[in-house]
Length: 123
Image (tube, rainbow, N blue to C red; front, side):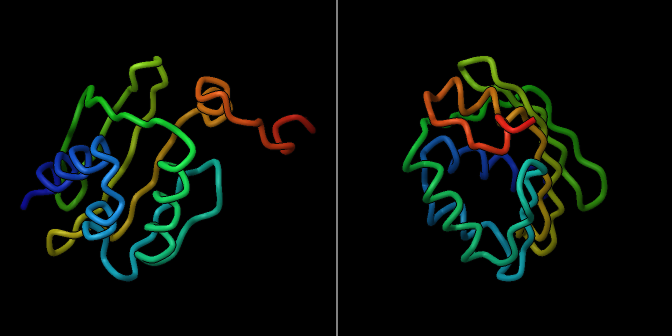
């Protein structure tokens, strides 16, 4: 699969809240770095993150733009509540080996009705 095809499959599984299916798209030693948190290392840690997040929030990824360059795919997305973000996916052998995401986590917490972590309130 091309990087764009892998990311489109990632979107499909994300929107189905398919935690196991999402985890299968990552290499065993993949890194997922959502810049508002520390990087996660390994498929098991990434699986646990998705399990936790889908357990507490309704998340939907609507593709706005998707670009490809070499082994990278760059996704600009939004959700139905208006949250926007972008993700950078490095793909090797049809698996995600590195992902970095940028979005406004404080807005996400507020829109989802989740408690705001203290780190946001201490500033």
